[in-house]
Image 1 (cartoon, rainbow, N blue to C red):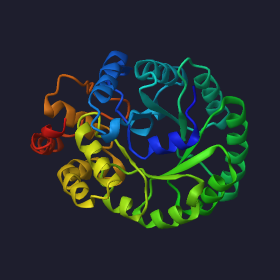
Image 2 (image 1 turned 60 degrees about the vertical axis):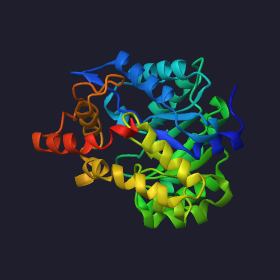
Image 3 (image 1 turned 90 degrees about the horizontal axis):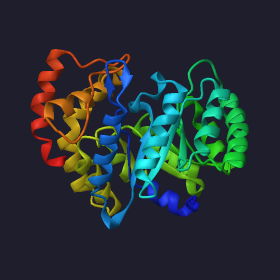
Image 4 (image 1 turned 135 degrees about the vertical axis):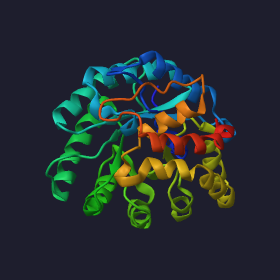
Length: 312
């Protein structure tokens, strides 16, 4: 049964964990993926018995896998989570017709996603085109598939169109910020009570939370779930000092993930899992366009991860 909107929005005021999808050479390791989902579900440190939120999205490398494989990932993840967690499916809108077909297929699963994250559009577009196309798209698939959407904001020029979308669409329930802290206040003020504004650039999120974001996304929770969860617990109770202290602990790993336009967003997490020596998660061997990090980065991560094991 679909969650009522207030319950879903409250559930999203949390950590949206985005696990890396492990690969064995050039093939998805579905058994390894199930192992990672089991880790996230079994290691839930969120307070007040809140449900784990899991998204199959950017760091899951959905841009590099076939539509059929993505459907299989969502099906297997949803089956494993059941109703004990919140499932979000990242949808790449290129081309838009294929994105719609994928939503139709996923919405027909026995355990469909609770929400769909509209990933950044590639290619030429205008703010007017963003507004018009997504209004039609979300109206159609929201009405026909009971789909609820989060918008991943990555183009500063589109901020006005995005605010209008969330205000005008009854199916877009919020926005994930993927730009910078300077866009937090305009989006929080612009969206108002019309949806949720989530920080979307990792666990370094204390300042955005102070500015008004609700919840954050984490690409490292698949290795260090306690860190991500305790950051969110602290922020929900207004304890920004504790949030900042944990953020400082994980910051060296985040620095490597996001250097040079996020080139190690995926592979640094893989390497951290390997260097930590955990046996209850699966890192894989590297992935398309994302091999293991260079040797000097491996050495750095070996040193960094020894201090993070307490958060596993």
